[in-house]
Image (cartoon, rainbow, N blue to C red):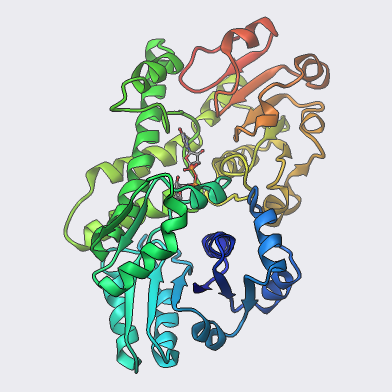
Amino acid sequence: MKITVIGTGYVGLVTGTCLAETGNEVICVDIDQEKVEKMRSGVIPIYEPHLDILFDRNIKANRLQFTTSLEEGLQHGEIIFLALPTPEDEDGSADLSYVLNVSEEIGKKIKSYKVIVDKSTVPVGTAEKVYSVIAKNASCEFDVVSNPEFLREGFAVDDFMKPERIVVGSSSDRATVLMQKLYSPFVRSGNPILIMDEKSAELTKYAANSFLATKITFMNEIANYCEKVGADVDKVRVGMGTDSRIGKRFLFPGIGYGGSCFPKDVKALQKAGKDSNYDFKILNAVIDVNVRQKTILLPKMEGYFKDDLKGKTIAVWGLAFKPETDDIREAPAIDMMNGLLKRGATLQVFDPEAMPNIKKQFGDTLQYSESMYDAVKGADALLICTEWSIFRTPDYAKLRELMNDTVIFDGRNLYNVDDLKTEKFTYISIGRKEIQ
Ligand code: UDX
């Protein structure tokens, strides 16, 4: 099939590449000339495991092309994906200006039947808006479909190629048939393509992400309470998670959720609720708790250093909002580092992928280390903000030798508490006993 993807951000690029992989002819459109040039020469502008092989293969096979011309893109595809940014507005709602501006152009430029697919995360009612904006100028038939993505950064290729479900909001049989044809190679295992109305599809995305953010936040509160009463959140987590109604996943406590989706989507649903005169009390609490959770280790660090972090050297491992990505949007590490800098600490930081992005934001306020061991040289404490695999089994003898003081503040509960006791570290983590 002939497919066009408008917007080559994270979602657009993964969508375009994975659709080319199943034999479709894909053209990706972006207004950024430099980015388009780079992609044409085979350079991927984002870090996403396994995407490079598919990207390279499909460019070489001529199934994946790039252009800055919306006109060219709109002529090519029968199915047009909108993978445009929907950034957070000042009031927390999703800013639809990119989506609606492109829709306006689509209305003016299409000359034959098209299915316009909303891939961006958009509030309930957006498909309707997109439809009417296009309809103002369109001289041919078209349909608008809502098809939210459920891609996790770091696992996006796998999530796209083997989805647990595909949600399609469509009220047109013609568009539904095309979407089913397009996605059938991805659900050979028998996973469903769920066809529903556009509004329910739009809400499914917000509801799923808000539920997951709530699940994590609930565990973070349980972890905080564990500390008060001397329980161990690891035990509680397993005890709860083995109940299949609860499930083991997304129960890991830590220093809060971040990223490009959860924070934005929870706020957007809260705001959308308000606009419809509905107060999502649970989301209000999730947002508040997560803000507090992101810096929950700061008072513990202050306690350890007797309220005097000035001049202390803190090593920071992990800056991305989660492992396997270079994305630092809403990363808890940022809040922790800002808090520590404000208190006069010197920070020696290391992340396997996110250093360039952090450098752009923090400039020379941080010391950038070449390796995880470089970062701990002469450090008065080690702070862990992201659970990269490489941090999971450190050489403790080396840490003891390199660090000035052997204390670890672990925002991701990477280590077994008793092991750290044996290794003679002071170890302070989330929802578990402290080792002094
Ligand atoms: C998420 C959704 O999973 C995906 O379906 C959606 O389309 C986009 O948003 P992503 O933001 O890439 O994906 O990351 P995810 O792996 O879901 O983690 C989100 C945040 O939750 C991270 O900050 C992570 O550290 C945190 N998290 C996750 C926890 O704190 N505990 C957990 O148990 C799981």
